[in-house]
Image 1 (cartoon, protein in one colour):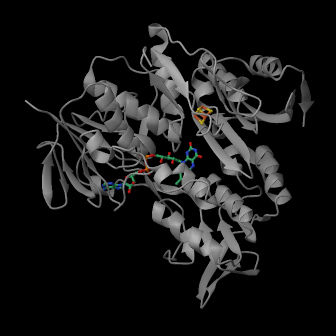
Image 2: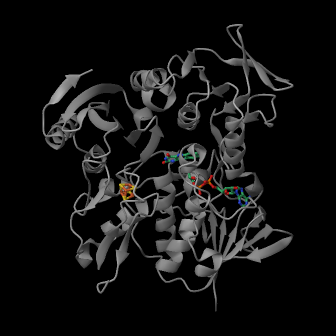
Length: 410
Length: 66
Ligand SMILES: Cc1cc2nc3c(=O)[nH]c(=O)nc-3n(C[C@H](O)[C@H](O)[C@H](O)COP(=O)(O)OP(=O)(O)OC[C@H]3O[C@@H](n4cnc5c(N)ncnc54)[C@H](O)[C@@H]3O)c2cc1C
Ligand code: SF4
């Protein structure tokens, strides 16, 4: 009998699952449900290349030239799933109950909004293609831009907007922007990168009120100052898209809870991957939700493998990995800086100049690193993380790679 | 099976190098270099993982005859 895989969410997690299923030999039915009325596209370029105009919408498409048909997918854009019945094994979407043998939950996250303020033309978040399109148009129209929240997406939007000539200010509630993700030391380093490129940074202040005016908005901050802007970009975190699972008995707690193979234990044939999933690594004791592109891609592969061969081994934990582009500099993170108790900023002398890598420790062991403008160092850091190498080892290997000594601490 | 790369597409993230430093590296311009085009079947899984990790599909497999 033909089987059917129903994939909910048509971004990188969902589409990669479909592609991996086909690549590994799944010949039965694949239905892909998407909430947006768009052909599947990739998200990292939305705040970077697409905003800058160095990539087109065609170039960020996830399906490739063959479209849905190329992979024999029953793609249904503009058809959000609204409910699941794990006993009957059906998903409700577009007024239809679709039976599944395998259900892959890849519904991602959505941006948090500023309290009490609906997003509108001048108050935006960047998560979807239409957000990036609209923002690009507004940027062309000029007017100062305020970025609320010193996270990576806000920082990238700030960088792209500066490159297009906009006047940009970042407002961050903590003392250093980016501190939540990378700590105050590296946050300070990244803050300098932004200042050097003409971004104004206001730290240690919150947003008290946002008022719409005829040609933009006025923002009042907790220190009593007011700021006019043509556009406010809000990047204050995300929430997993799980409301459609309410009442389904699929366990949800800040994400869909899964085992190390991305399977939902309580519901047969159900998996969750990518930004919406909160999984537990092999040998780990805590569930984590990871909003990194590579994580979604790897989990898509894991699920496809499970479906093709249920006896495939439980995968080992991979080093978490994230990249970001700001002002032409690649910022790359391996491991979990947020789960560390020490950090050292080290400079290495490479043939292409001095490079800074922040090395984080946890109880003396290597926990994470953030490399600024040195992509070649990522392989070293990643394999060190996966081997459980010591901090001294990581430093020594990076010294060898740089073919010089580390210049020392900064 | 062989590895192919398109340096025009490559954005130099080094994701591939991070997964498989035996077959991939970055050159002085920060673009991908395939160190060893020919892949032993035992290394296929790692090469595939590196190919998956590229956000711009700048590396791919070509058949033995390609
Ligand atoms: C602007 C931006 C820049 C980024 N840059 C980087 C970067 O440089 N490096 C990096 O590692 N990561 C980056 N990320 C994160 C990365 O893009 C995500 O980790 C990745 O997109 C996660 O994929 P996903 O498929 O799990 O979820 P998502 O991409 O969030 O996709 C989920 C999809 O499901 C759909 N959906 C939601 N509810 C339903 C429903 N009920 N029914 C059907 N469909 C539904 C949504 O519309 C959406 O299309 C960036 C993200 C953004 C937004
Ligand atoms: S992952 Fe892709 S973009 Fe990055 S260096 Fe390798 S080939 Fe280039």
